[in-house]
Length: 115
Ligand SMILES: [Zn+2]
Image (cartoon, rainbow, N blue to C red):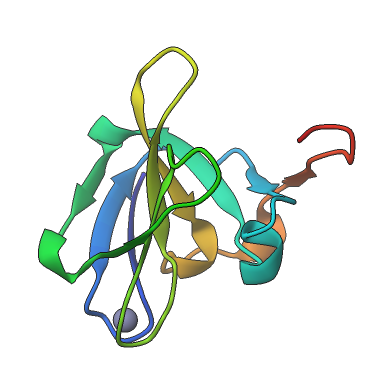
């Protein structure tokens, strides 16, 4: 399944391939503010359709996750990071994908014990 996603104004657009089996409602300090629902995919399944230069980047804590956002509409459609095995991943905010019914996606919540 191929999905397309974008920020609100469309300056950032992307394609991502895969099957959404679930999403993560992350409780870290940034995701809890943004309300992102996260879907993790290998970076090879992600393709940016717009210019890399239009991505603004925010990092915090250990600065290993690049949270990309749009400077025009301020949406945070995805982030890039590396998984524990060293594989590049893309973390998609599925709220920014087109044509998906969010009510059908099982959402996992981090328990309060995990960081
Ligand atoms: Zn935008």
